[in-house]
Length: 206
Image 1 (spheres, rainbow, N blue to C red):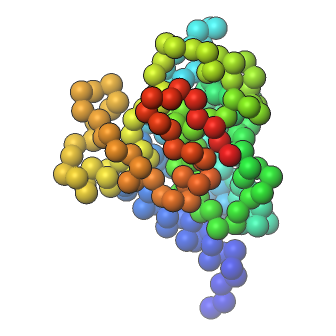
Image 2 (cartoon, rainbow, N blue to C red):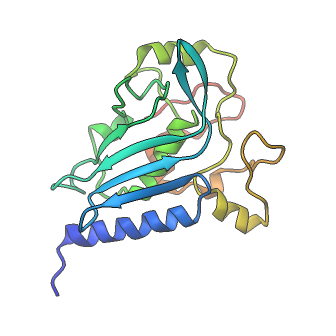
């Protein structure tokens, strides 16, 4: 039976998302459509939100991903549904992916896109030079209250822990996975820009 290139890509993306969910204690998703063209993803980890003019931790986040008729030639439609205070996410949930917003790369699969979104949420990567939320950018450039990244775990934390024989715990616990680069796919690292130096507060998306 003939399967179009787009249908095959959508099927492979769904398989990759299911594999990602198996490899992560942070990530889960719900999907709809035949083939799947809409995802509601959840991150269970530490980010920041502004509540009653106070910046505080938030540990659950939802993002909607819609795949249009021209996907993967065009970028998915992204919307952050839960509160988040971030230079590159607008107050109404629009997400800026830096250069990928204007020069989308069809070879970037959804699981790698999710890794990028998680790195944004935990302030592992962010850009204060061309923000979607200028107030958040100014705050991030000057604040000293919250250590960045806000969550030390890479998205594929269970896979990394399995490789090392370690226990996955919440970042507020006593044990965390320190070397996260081994679990971040190369496409995600390139898409998200430079990897943070632990001593630096500001990381720039390319």
